[in-house]
Image: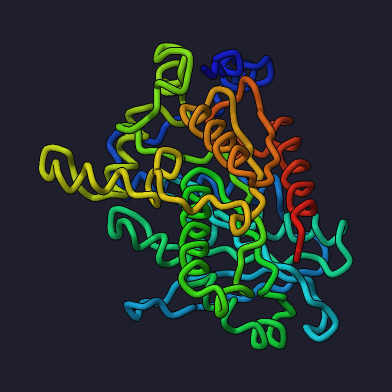
Length: 364
């Protein structure tokens, strides 16, 4: 049985950072939505300080894409400043972290522009970066977030000529990248993509997602964690890292509860059926979508002190056993979504690995 507990010992850099006093919780008297605003503003400010101001020639477009229910899905596109006819850039769809609850256009501005400029230095046509501001809990719950992401993907894939002429994007070469809840949505989008390709292979063949880059991905609901796949429950990340500062078990369950908008006490049968859905718990699902012929290359970034560590590593193992091409990076001694703290040296290593992953994904 797998034992990943050695990755959970705090690193020297993390211990020094944790003792610096930087990590301060929001004021206790804030409501849920006030706390969300506080954390969003804090993230935007930090990322502006570290990644900004924008460097290089970047054009930014705000694009509203219609959802099936008629609501506009906000997206923001970052591209190189060149005539669209003089480039044909692959597209990265960026899906932000925050438990399906946090994040907005402003929190991702500096990072997306920075990533766009980094990739321009490595690739002749550069890469465009599109951030999807999917709708959040508690106002919206599953499957709204996933529907928003897939709608954006399908809109671009269906309108390749428009994407090329308007923004210089090759929307037949799309990579999905996300952290935490964003990684979960990236996996869900890939599942829908495979399911639709299987149903209609002739019409869907040119809409295949080319790659996934997943950082600290949740891959199974906590009620279904497969303890039988690890050495024992006590050394599992769900127990070892249950009280870590950035994402402990209490907050994990809060985010899942808001996302699924149901409780075991209220709707036991519905709850049991919902959490086993492949779109919720791909790690433990028996649905045959993880087909190496259709599933995209998948890159994993897993943090050693993360409560989600084991489920990320086990999902990578599952994909690899099915013949899917994967890349794996482990960051021992760092907590969940440490990459959201870009001042860390380990976060800088993550950024280097992220760029290498993107460049390694085949475009055909």
